[in-house]
Image 1 (tube, rainbow over the protein chains, first blue to last red):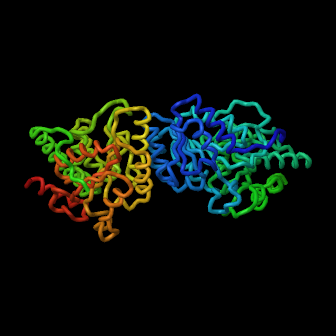
Image 2 (image 1 turned 60 degrees about the horizontal axis):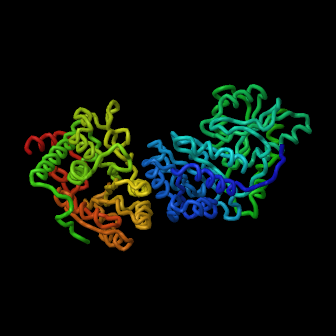
Amino acid sequence: MLQGSFSSIREAFGKTLVKLGEKDNDIVVITADVGDSSRASYFKEKFPDRYFNIGISEQDMVNFGAGLSAVGKKPVVVGFAMFLMRAWEQMRNSIGRMNLNVKVFVTHSGYSDSGDGSSHQALEDVALMRVIPNFKVIIPADAAEVERSMPVVLEDRGPLYYRMGRDYSPPITSTMDYKFEIGKAYVLREGDDISLMGAGVVLWDALKAAEELEKMGISAAVINLPTIKPIDQSTIEYYARKTGRIVTVEEHNVMGGVGSAIAETVVKTYPVPMRFVGATTYGRSARSQRELLDYYGITPKTIVNSALELIK
Amino acid sequence: MEKGGRDGIPISIEELNKLKEVADRARKNVIRMQFYDQSIHVGSSLSSIEILTALELKILRDSNDPVNKDWLILSKGHAAPALYAVLHEKGLIKEEELWKIQDISGLLQGHPETFIPGVDMSTGSLGQGLSFGIGVATGIKMTKGTGRVFVIMGDGEQDEGEVWEAMTHAVARNLDNLVAIIEMNGFQLDESTKNVKPKEFLPEVWRAVGWRVFNCDGHDIASVISTVGEALKTGKPAVIFAETKRGKGFTPIENTKRQRTVPDVARQFLLNS
């Protein structure tokens, strides 16, 4: 574990999108003037007729995608996570309500747009998206999981929100070999005393925390939940029973996000004490995403301390 | 603004008279619906009757193939009762369903939903139909289909920012299979449109952005049909500003911001008409 090389989430997205576009002529890519920043523009180089930069208009982008799907296209709508949220109502009222086959791929979520500051840092989007009926919500752990999951996601039918950051992608799943399935959790590390569960790049912190806990004689399982909705209830219940304690970790506000989704399952199946590691307020500017994660306490140390609170 | 010509879509006097009868029946059925539900938007619906009749019963080409059918998007979704009444005339909605509008056991929702036969887009939140229509029209052109897309909006709806996003987008796509119809009935929810925000500049703005701009009498079926015919021949996105009246033909509320009356007044009105 923790082997392999760092690589970029958005590079993996842009390159995989081109590969999938070669296989499926119905895939069309739409962006609101962030094609280069998201790497969606790689698709334009290969398939200019199936690529639409519609300008800085996220609301129009969502309904444009909805219309394209209504006539059989497979639209991939690409934007910054934060600015797709201004089209939340369009996603709810058009894509969700009509249950249309539109895939919303966002980059720059969490603290990944470190320099631009709080206006650009989406820490609320998972809460907003998982509440929309018919929408599935996916958060890939790293660049490797982007490559692994995208073919499956684009084969799936229906509304889906796919949440990515930018470049920061510590190796989490890159040395693993598994077939990605929507709705399935993956065990990154086995353990008996506590479960660390989460999604996205911060699973690296959970893995680091598990190594620290091991030094203290505590055996921590680490569970990757790339699908926040529909959530893998049986795996969550299994580890709730097995370890009796759960710490969740996410690059998102602790209200309504990944931790909340896990807690909803835990209280229904096998209630155990939990702690939630994540954001509690707006971000700010910094030179790197890692700096911000450290600044706001989404770190191995916080996860270790939360685990120790539950264990002592 | 251009006046719609007379050489767009051919229609005989007999056919025109039949459409007028359809519109009359649809109008009465909308007024009748408020016997059963007192919260429907009667005034906004009556503004749309002739436009919907002309489109649904004369202009639209139906097909099961999404790219070879014409699409009608009622972006001003609160005029759903008018759409349902016209779809009933088309044989797609049963009469008993009309009287169960907004009832928990009924099919017909307060705003259009695609699970209702004949509804092409679920609407209700203003400002979204044109963007969807651009997506449909673009998909049709990519697949070399023959379908055309009609989007009906309100004048109050023009306040929504997404309309600007879509209006500029359609021109960039150079869509010649898209016609927007804006009903200028002069009222929005709270008050007359001129008390809220000026709307007179709208045709100029649409023209400046790159649309071909037409106007028509939105209560004259012949005018609607011929103007749509012209609009379809421009080779550009076209918009029709249709002069209409809120509550048209229902004198207790006509040309006022009132959406409805008490059922007794409606009953009396229908008895006398």
